[in-house]
Image (tube, rainbow, N blue to C red; front, side, top):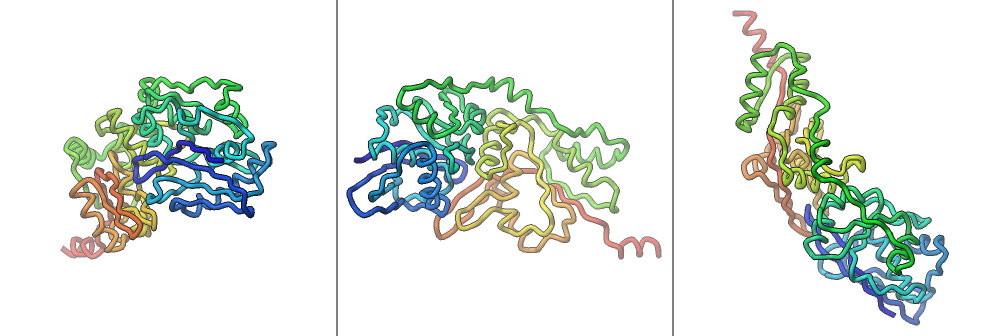
Length: 362
């Protein structure tokens, strides 16, 4: 028997629809997942098998084939656990569901059938809304993040049984709703403020001019002079983020897995301060499946490089493209992805000791 469901995957910061097909045939027991799955997707068969058994169902002792289309796009992450488990139960005849094509389903499963949060949920919800889906089943921990995409019914689920009961019509789930305007206004408060700085009028004037024009800035001063303290407070005098900018910033942090479940929308300008030992892949982004780096996480905000001379030369040279074009392209054998990276660069360094000696001698 064949079962089909709709799910989502993320490439870069944008999502696209995935069709999951589950087929069970009368052959020797096996479990195969095809469609360019990565390691996390291949491991889902172990989570799905345990979740199905621990939720009171039987795992079919036959040949199980899971196809993820389009087959030429790499699938990564654990968001396919829930739709795979539902598809297996439908294909084995243990549940009867006729409404799966109305909903997009995402979620990671634990071994007891609990649905856990996944990355990139905002991108998935926006894509599902644009596709005209009736609704989307998501982990409860991701419900507020997904609800930021207005115009789409978000149904939070806690476990596999609850998802099955909802899809079969046995129980109902109220769509999760948030007041986007209220959330946006509430999230725009900074924990630190530029007005807290006393004195330092000359550097405060320079930072104000830089903030007004979006200029990059290099600060040089003795240790303890307040360079890092001033740089951290610079974001509080930058113009407020617009809603579109906030959504784009949130998508990047969600895809990277840096979005706190208590903060479904990032409405303040990000401040990123990587250590000087960071690699070029950590700063620009990279990996076999390219991930956003610090320059993209600082998009619409500030990238602060403290102890600038301590950074590796090749790392600093890689900043040229994002500074010039406002985006960074990462090319790998698997694929080539572009991430937005429009930020203010603030660097700090200590003055040269020789210069101090020359001044003293003079």
